[in-house]
Length: 266
Image 1 (tube, rainbow, N blue to C red):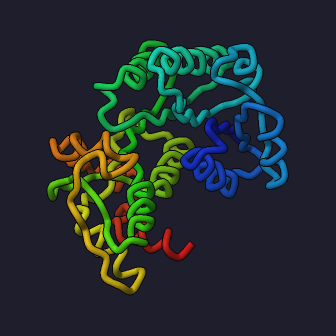
Image 2: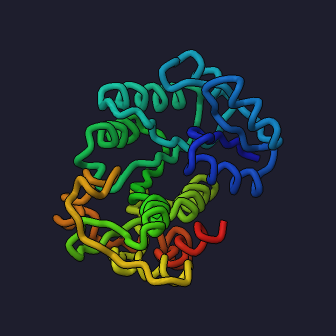
């Protein structure tokens, strides 16, 4: 039996993938955590852990020993230079420890992101068997904000009717586990769910709440934490669809309506 390790295990994507993987492989799955507090929390769920930090090569070297396949969830560090250094450490120490396959969670448009591009290049040049998953933005984040906005009766955007291509965390986690446990021949996957508009999002929230929720176009800065995304959305940066996610899952990815329903009912 192969031994699996999941990084980013206390985050949304890593945590979801970890629990799917644990169900399938049981004691052959471990989670990489940064400290003993996180380890203790996961231990209460009967999840095995190894302590390691992206900034501490020695800890990574120890944590990767005996691991066959690694799900490498990208660092949340915003500083590009920090992220590049962290990712280089993970890849190099994993290979040095004998990890045979690395699944890396990259991002849509990674070729324009120095952090992700550098990591994809490192994986290719170091020669390890690897799978790159270029994940779309999370549908869940847009749906959750729309549900919060709906308290005022209006979902806000600055999309000007543009479509958005996103993916649910659940679908991305399942895809990551499939790539980890059954490594595909193809190395690069563009994981994108169905396109949707903010009018459709408002309609989905309306259907779940049982009352009319409007969609209102506002200025970028009035959209809150997503303000930086809307100029890109209007340019169509997040509008191109791909069949890769459906191919990997062997089913249709979740639509915006399904994600809204899950969040409203949870």
